[in-house]
Image 1 (spheres, rainbow, N blue to C red):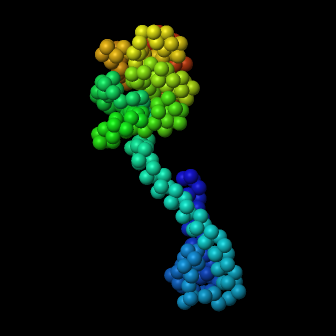
Image 2 (image 1 turned 135 degrees about the horizontal axis):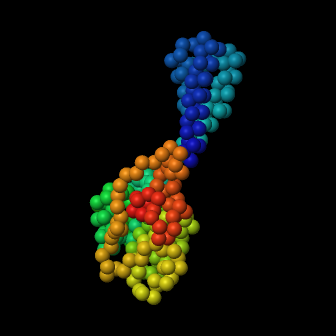
Length: 270
């Protein structure tokens, strides 16, 4: 949509200025008068004070009406749909979504999510919440917290939360079945994402393990996303496999074993 709109706008400017210089050359009119003629033509406003005096000028005006007016009329529904979509997105909570990379996704906003957010904010890590409870989304909107209004087990909602660029996802739902469905939807969308899930029943633990959930949290335990993690900076040579790459793109899961030291310390963080 953006490229289509940009292409139409560029084409309109080309028509206006190209037509203006063409009218100047053909009719010998000054630039301002030529510009006025072209704009009056492509906007279908019409004119009576300026008319082409030559056959070539008439042919140019015909081309302007066909191509210029068509381009101007075609951009009106694009602008209208954008404005309507913007209002709809704002009403659904999508208007609060920033452009994020290497962020943490939190599915459901509750006590566990609040606890996790304390650590996330303390480490100044970008995050976004997925929630569709009206009372909760209203609170998130008041607090100006970034969120997506939707079911976190839906693929399109996870994509709205930019899961392909996320480093971790916290499944904080009080329903183990919902957390299971979210994990099943999340892993194919981002094979390298770290999944942290709340378990509400011990019977669900084996299911979580089969789903390759990285961290299983008992709601009675205190959550610590950064336990045993040391932050630091490491020099990276120009010929290194990870030189110039984001942490997410280093594919730390492929470069280490399940119990081995991480290639980069912060890979374990998010």
